[in-house]
Amino acid sequence: MDSLPSSDFDAADRLETRAQARASLMLGEWAARLMGLKDVDAYAQVVVRTGAEPGGEEAILRRVSHDLADSGLAVGAAEVAARHAEFLAQARSRPGLTPGP
Image (spheres, one colour):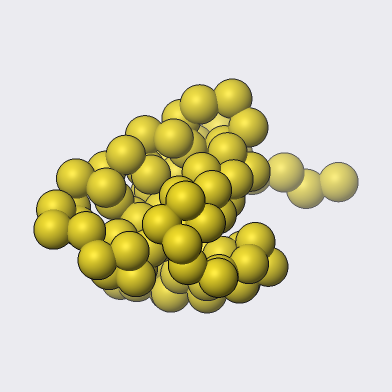
């Protein structure tokens, strides 16, 4: 079975971590705009930090879903998860986030 050299694995792991953080940032910005928050960047950073907590992606999805509901918005957990998946795909396709040859 072929495996990636350690340095390639580390680089791929770093790229995935950056893509996850970017997707979380984008999700936070999207949610903040829906909620009509004045400080979109501050909320987006809170969402990114939530990803570092136990549960990672699930914690992010729970937090954003809860915050949207608390704001009186009828945005379901499935829509939040779909948006996160969309943002993750976009983040992974960004230049600098894909491994080179």
